Image (cartoon, rainbow, N blue to C red; front, side, top):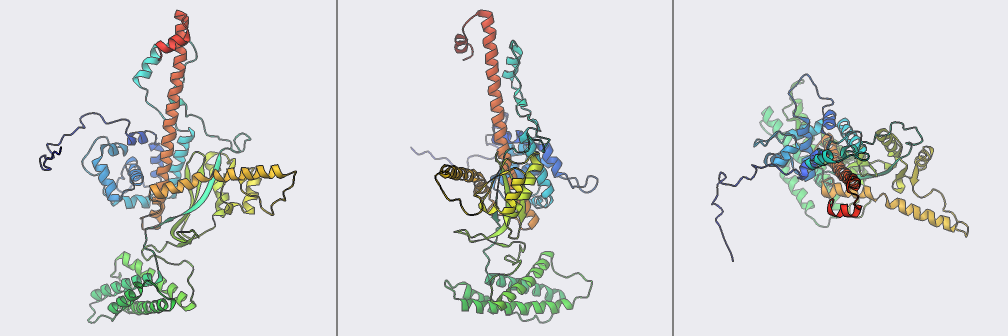
Length: 534
């Protein structure tokens, strides 16, 4: 049976609005909100902001909550604001007192938020999460009516049960040099590259883009100076020459080199015209170009010099090579992977604890040897947790002699293959070598969680496609993704502790009731358990 109805039968005023009742307290955003240390995050966010001057800033919970929503759901800036505007649960999550139809702020504010959230802010965020995880910050779980009635009516024959909120009050170690807390936990370290959202760069396409920017600058300068006759740029011929080479499927080296020479000559001519036009502007007068175009002009001059030097020397590399005119801070990272031998973006040194909390220890746009960061990562772990790790799990690239000497000096076990020539197997040491090999294999498999963390960030939260344009905003974008993943770990631990604490409370209460009825009636515990306590 097919039943159809007109899609124009209802107006918005006739739509059934079900929210005259209370919202669901088991909603995922409500649960996540209950385990986040908002006050501690706010303290870190307000660091560096002027307290006595300037416009009043948005509330820290609103800003941080919006950033969490954006990266947890992988939304754009505009879509994030619209989702908050339409969803009452998201409005509760960002700290609004009630449902409102107006947008909480303009989407363009996200850019200023990312500029404001630097390394100091995210260090404070991560430390607040660590303190909450270690039990320094006590979670207060509201007591239900059933628990209050049971506590009031029970006869305290034995030691009273401890409330559930005291389960997570284990203090963080404060004596890092003591024998008890010198080595605790394990530290997993690794490095990865997070790719920027740029077009795949080629020398020919970069020179063509630089030529087009130079032509735009010439047009604006001619309009401002009221030049009667524009300089000849041969833009149509240059465009045809570029397309004739770019559209070829199989390109030989001679043809490509000829195309590069053509684009270099066109660009050199345009840069000469720009230099002559700029001389007509009196010294001290502001240049008639927008800021973004002046920035492009500075970049294309450096790009031309790099490409010309590589053309003259017939090489394919240079120092600080520019691969994007709009994002000149991005560098190529040669990783040697099967599907992506070269990646374009920032390189991260990341450390992961045994509980799954990740920390970006170093973010750089130039290629570097990640093994040199191991000492700083171990010391950073000690500063955060108050003690050294017991074990360090890492790739073989971290197993340099200096790193091994440092770890041995501090009594930290390094899970890696020993340096030097392998020992010759004999009847006496065969079993020992077999056990050592099995232990190394087990240690190596224990570093899999950090690879999973990279996969979670890249596949689930867009860590492999950073859409911020500036270096500092990209830093905030990357760290925000790790912040979201750490908050999900904190949420899982928080509700696991609450659940285990409640189970322990019920178990203690059952024993108290059993003893109480045994004294009053003399019945067996099995009878009481089956008939009264279920």
